[in-house]
Length: 315
Image (cartoon, rainbow, N blue to C red; front, side, top):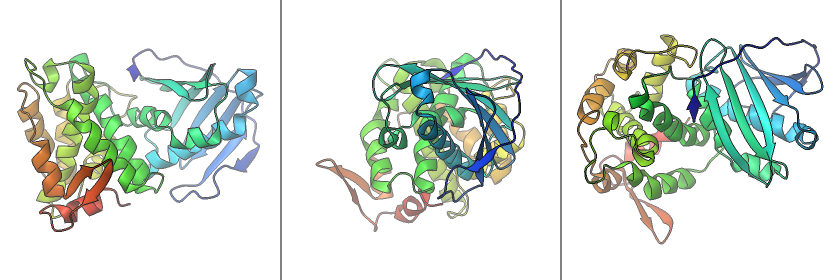
């Protein structure tokens, strides 16, 4: 979830650095303690400060910092860098044993707010998606409110794909999630295009469906040499991170198409922005060689786009 307000903060530096993730395969990650409540995590050329003020959560700081680094690793691997050079992450407490909520705040000094249960366990944190989702928001510029489906749909789609590409999620887990939930993004009776139907389903899963269709189409037109990830890396390279704003989604899509040399994003946006354009999801799953039977993912490697599907969740 994204919110616009941003605050600026000053930090006290302490130079005490220790390894954070022993199994990191994307970038070197380290953590430094700034004061009793603030910890600085470095990944690549980026740094983010994690603030934990609650005493109960502070006693679990090691698992929370590992979770933040673990999540940042997936985003770094997908984009080839962490989206912004500095970000502030405030972890707040609630009751229970799960991650409850997350928000991203854009502008010159981006920040994240994540609400975590006081009884959280390392196992629950490893499975949770919220921190990665909010970090993906950092890799996209703010857009007008009627195009928020781009921000939320992108984070919904990339969160799963990025974690799978780094080996944090299994292919079965990701495809099962998409097969069982992607239909929530289809237009209902009376719906218009993505820019004009700001319902929950169309915003999160309609945006994710746009990303899925774009990913498949870029791979088709490039003979599987490029993907949505190449377009998104190009968009980020052009400066469209959460530190910036865009007049509209079209200029972002133009930057993505420029990066791949293919007119996929602009064409797809023009098809889906104003008209409902119901995607034939059944046909898409069939062409990718995917089906869900009795809760299990079934793969058909003879399907027309099976070769593309096999590469979509690979590093």
